[in-house]
Image (cartoon, rainbow, N blue to C red; front, side):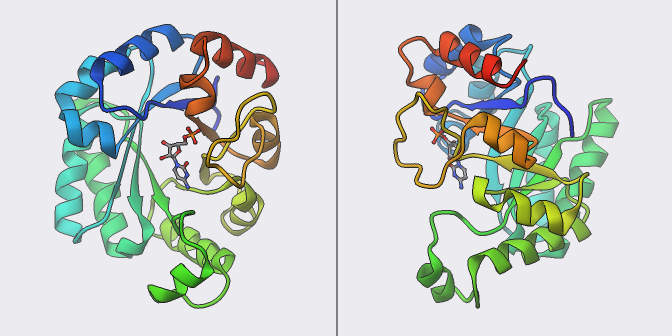
Length: 237
Ligand code: C5P
């Protein structure tokens, strides 16, 4: 997947005014906007419409996980919002993923919109090995990530969300056409915050990331537009 600017800025706020202000300031500096569960739960579709800049593609990060029928219904609603990228949990299984992908494609086609890219979370990066074993994953987390990435691909989804340190393993498992969405990105000049395993934007691109999810290095900067411009320059855009 090739985007002119691979950076989706994570607008992790519950305030539509804050999102709208950042969206306006960042138009032309980032490739898209990511709204997550906290924003969507607080504000719903109307909040997304108010908080986005219509010139920027929308990434709605809801990490859906339920029975296939319910996730398909939610995906139809997501597709009606004109979403470019959205997420679900691979642990929902092959049938759930397939139902979500089909629902997104059918709804978008009916509206004459591009189908939303459906990407899966494999193993939450907040889980360490002990926590992953406690919920039934057996063996190294990297094995689980590869296995669930393969399942995601076989179920017809577009890609996965993965940590910077998983890029090469997932790419080797799933090939060049699988979309890798990568958070945990920190420019060398930014505060690290709570991201423990990070790469710079350039390093993540060089390893094969397709979409870079970057939040606080841009949103918490004194001048968000300048921070985004600096990242653009570092990526040679
Ligand atoms: O501010 P920061 O750049 O850390 O924001 C990262 C974004 O990526 C947040 O929206 C966060 O929810 C998301 N994310 C993450 N780590 C993951 C998956 C998603 O940081 N493993």
